[in-house]
Length: 181
Image (cartoon, rainbow, N blue to C red; front, side):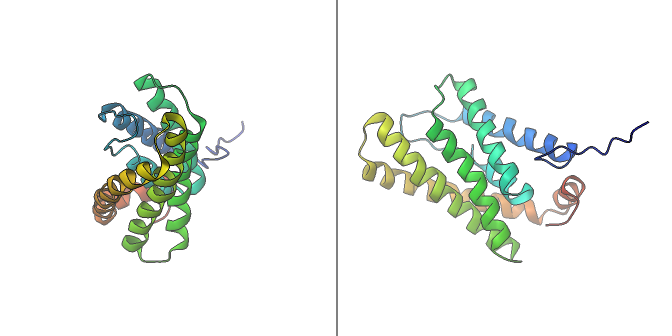
């Protein structure tokens, strides 16, 4: 009889796959609950994607961003826009890369990861996509979205820092990813 080592290509283990799926569902649900405007919306839908980047790394978080966007489109009845999906993917990618590269200071690293992920994914890439989609001038969108995502980044940074300080969360994450953050 062959031993099952619970390895899955991108995710590494079933535990990580399940945690990533939970983050996808949470992000899709948060997108569903957010009040909708054409180009402007306040939402914490990116929090699970960024948290995945910090906890699971850039590649898994990129997959979480893609699936989350597709789920959110499905829940809300939006058409899938590949550039918006690219922006969601970049939120996961950037948060994971920045957290890994920014050193041993966990709380500063997580805050920097949140800010840069929002800047690249939601402020820059999504502003370009929404400008093309709706014909709104890019600089107007950039100004609106910069303020919105600065406030969102502040809230999400505080939330991530609180979660990373919690001993129970740390122990649970250690069981999922196999090491301490």
